[in-house]
Image 1 (cartoon, rainbow, N blue to C red):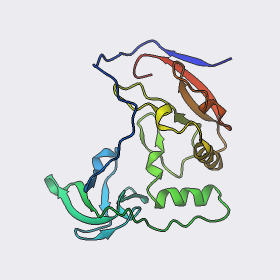
Image 2: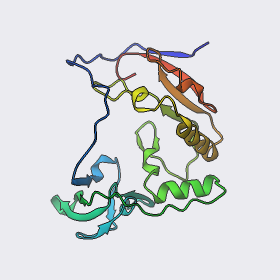
Image 3: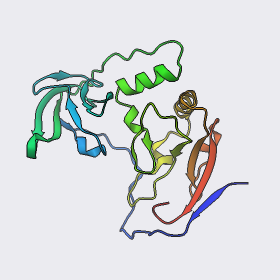
Amino acid sequence: MKKVINIRKGLNIKMKGDAPLENLPFKSEKFALIPDDFRWVVPKLSVQENDKVKVGTPIFVNKENEQIQFVSPVSGTISKILRGDKRKIEAIEISSDGNFESETIEIPNALNAQNIKEILLKYGLWQTIRALPFNVIANQGTAPKAVFISGFDTAPLAPDFTFLIDSKDISFLQQGIDILKKLTSTTIYLSLYQEKNNEFLEKLNSVEFCYFKGKHPA
């Protein structure tokens, strides 16, 4: 029997149209990292203007926790460092060379909780793990009571996760869950929206499924 959580309070925001279910090529010569996109992060720069960078090159770290690195999404050159009042870092602009050359990622043969954390911290992936209730970057030294993976988004014009994920090959998702299992001994919950077709996601192992229905922000 499915466990369904019904969100009774909320709002269905009436917006004309829906996000089209199509993949389009993304082309841009300019990219930027904006520290304010990450709550409670005080940036400390690791680069200067005109520095050459690759995908995965550290751009800045969090002063409060310098193990957490924020890295370049493209290869190219640091074209501008924008500062505001009191020299606050507002954005780090990167001019892409279009090659997407990446840093070499060193992955040990045997993965354990410690070296998984080191890899995620070093290559800019740890900040995708957020701590509730304030949705801040998780502290790598704190053991979670549970882990939640969201398989949907009820926000207006939000992308459809079941469209973005290749239903014919979810092996990469299973690999990610298996790695999370090495980080924690607690339950991993996968949240799904009851009104969507979740058949292929329900084939995933090592997770406990939890279904939602109701208005935004379900």
